[in-house]
Amino acid sequence: MISFACAFAFSCVVYQIL
Image (tube, rainbow, N blue to C red):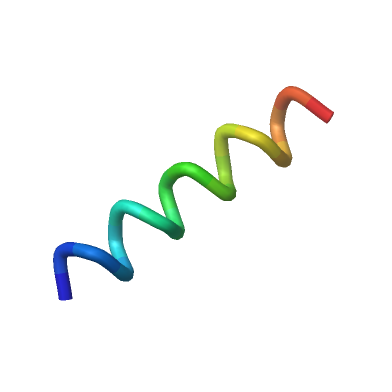
């Protein structure tokens, strides 16, 4: 699922920033 992978990657980025 490309959408799932994209959302997961985005979440990881946000989590790292926070």
